[in-house]
Length: 164
Image 1 (cartoon, rainbow, N blue to C red):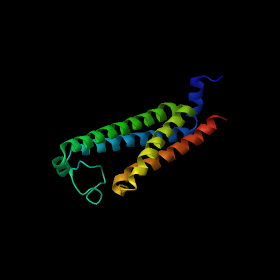
Image 2: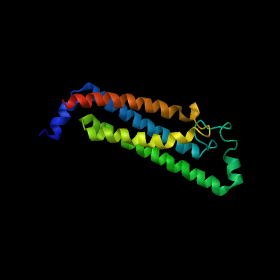
Image 3: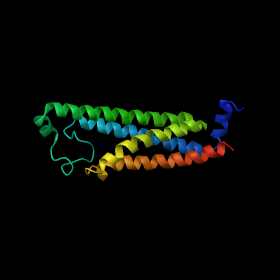
Image 4: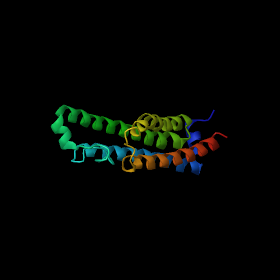
């Protein structure tokens, strides 16, 4: 039976695995960056999410707060909570990719892939019925997701080679 250090040594010799896990980690950091933008906008005059403007929501921060301070605080708390969960997912993806996938651990790859898949599968469909699917709103997430998929595919090729 191979030890963990034997697996790590073998996995390190596969450039696709190293490159793929690094790209996956970078995408995880990208998720953290998106969460930071989301968080900061909550406390600025922008208030609404990146890429959401008057065509999607016909009132701004001041109008929402004037209409209903409790609704304003509720929306703010959702912004803060969602940004926290996006950041947490980014940390999980980056750590799993860098410390598990890079060592050739298939369980880490599966988990690192499952985290954003579940998050996006739940979050994305709600954007389309009400016109929140603007490029400005979803563009960064789509770009980061494409980067992640490239890294995950490359890492998977490397993982398959380490198992032979």
